[in-house]
Length: 281
Length: 252
Image 1: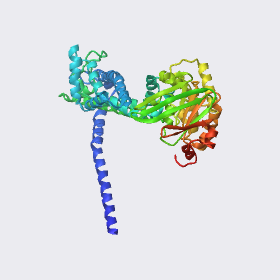
Image 2: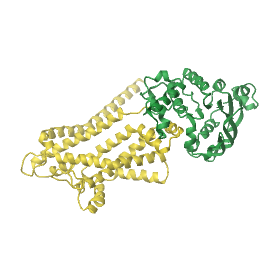
Image 3: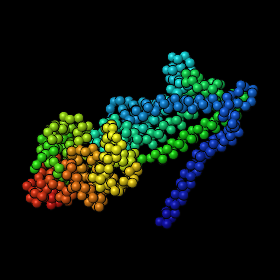
Image 4: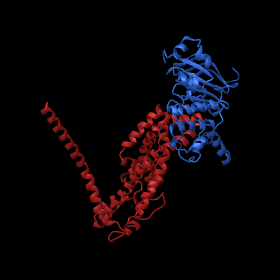
């Protein structure tokens, strides 16, 4: 009996050790990436890097100001497209729950979630770039918006499903029309969850390169016109890192660092926002 | 029995094919408290939800028969109109969590898009909160969230929210089942006070509560209206054997 007990304790300790080991092991690449990124990237970051346009090959210095602005424009445009659509579809899923359209929408969302991002780039190329005969920020935003859509639809649906039915009944029992019940009671109650979804969606698309390769295309100039090609941080990383110039490699590290920080900020904002505006029922 | 506010004639209610209310005929008197009691699952909440047409929103919910509000056919009115004239308070307090106490009370107007001057709105809020004896407790924290209040206070806030619309009928669906005894007593007092200005229908599975607050009591069993009459008569001399058995605790 005593012998048996000791054996069990031994296996317990062994299992605990194993779990701890694998946890640590999976953290290693993460820490390694962060360490390398900071080590290589921070050296490239200075005022000029953040506020100047790129210089031609051979000239040292220059920065990625146009890419930072471009990424921000791409994020804003794609968010403007994806948010109304995504929230609308999310409300539909949460409210209607069953039926053919709901089934199709769920299926579509799942498929979209798994679609390779380069395919979305091709789609945006066919839909926007070809008819308009020009690479553009708009085309890039369309590709990114399609990527964001499933994230926002799912988070909106999940958030709204958690809102107690009694709240909706309370509004309806006051004689409120259905649309006002949704707009003034249900949506505000789900605000933090929906906002979190939007920010996570942004974090997901901010670093995407593939959908931008033949849509936004990249540009050495500062461009604010959404109908013209535009530069973006992931494109800088892609183009510079695959160039033969050590000076550009350094800049690619810098751009990676800036991009990672941006994504981190969106992720943190999502966490903080979720906590700050959490509604207790 | 005096004036009647709500009358049902051959009222049937269904969930899909399942009939939960069978041939209900009753008249609810004006400016009185009418209790609907019965064991769980007897259809008392469904009956209440027929009066403000919430039953139709439940999946598969259907109503057959007639309900009259004064002399108009309630089922031919727009549900939105019905619900403005018939207020409801639910089992669990459900103040709007995103709104302040003030906004909760005025929510009926805001959600219906009715514009009010600031003075008028202030007046409605104050009156409604005074009617529910909540004014003195919350007048300094009107702009805090309604969900910060205690359970009993929240329920009184919900009653104030319903009363602010000046309904003709107030439906209460087991309004104290989630509350402690002290808050329950407070709400019961309130119900008795309120009947001068609004006709009240209260669903309860607590026989004592029906006895304390109701002028008239209906006993519902398995979807049928077994007996309906003045509370005192029903409690002391029930005509139906099932009523007597329920009151003496033989089932339910």
